[in-house]
Image (cartoon, rainbow, N blue to C red; front, side):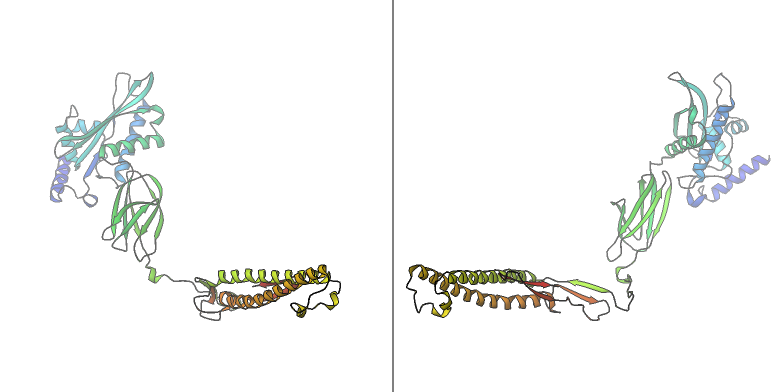
Length: 404
């Protein structure tokens, strides 16, 4: 009488609340303990233990609350006991639906386990059914084989989880629900675009089990990144807070000594290649001039009356000796070329100095290659210039070296 009254109260409560009053509207499920089936070889303790562990794992999966169902408080009953109490000689859908109604469940899961043989080895055969209580119809069913070594512990839990997901229609992988403080944005998992935020939220199904890199990209916001772990058959809720680019704070710390940090600003520099070109020309002009000077001295030294030779004599007199005349003419040609070289050296030298100033010294303007400037708007740091003339030991040439 007491049991009947309790059952009536549950049914009335279910009708009043619409039949889905559990856990935010999820259909309630009752999972009956797997019945150990005796196939004539008797019921051994190992099979009974396997039935209990598999049943507990199925119920734990429902208790997680991440699937489509939620376990009712009275949903942990034994199948064999409920069949006896409700005079169910078999597992007919009508009789099993009455048990589900009595327990206040919309869905009923039940089954059996028995020892069997496959390929010469002893295994367990597990049959599980999912019943729609209101319709009094089977919603799904499965028959699975289970190695004896997998019938307890972590392996048994893994098998039970897989069977539950299969019966409940849960796809492989987990579900990720992302909510953000922005209306729209692109959601990426492990660098691959997976969805778009709509009104600040998106639900991604079939996310592979394991650790992933979650990223969110949105215009005018800094890229968001986080490490997440998804479990197959479960739903992960993740809340992301993105920062507007305009609100990013740039650190401004002064280094030891009181000097503000130096910020380099690069600009297009057309003067540097011009400077390099003029420097090459200057070197060539100096080399040419020195060469003609040495050549002129060499030719003049071979004239018999060399001490009487002067560059001003060129074009005014000719030595009587033919050999001296040849050297005299060559010395005069070298003297003329030397004067051209000195003029060219001077002109190009001016160009070298001018382009160097434009390329490396001038503070402002389009010609500045790099401005070294303090972040606080202080003084610029200029490159230091050192010009070092170097004369070879034999006096045969000169090198103009720039250090900056």
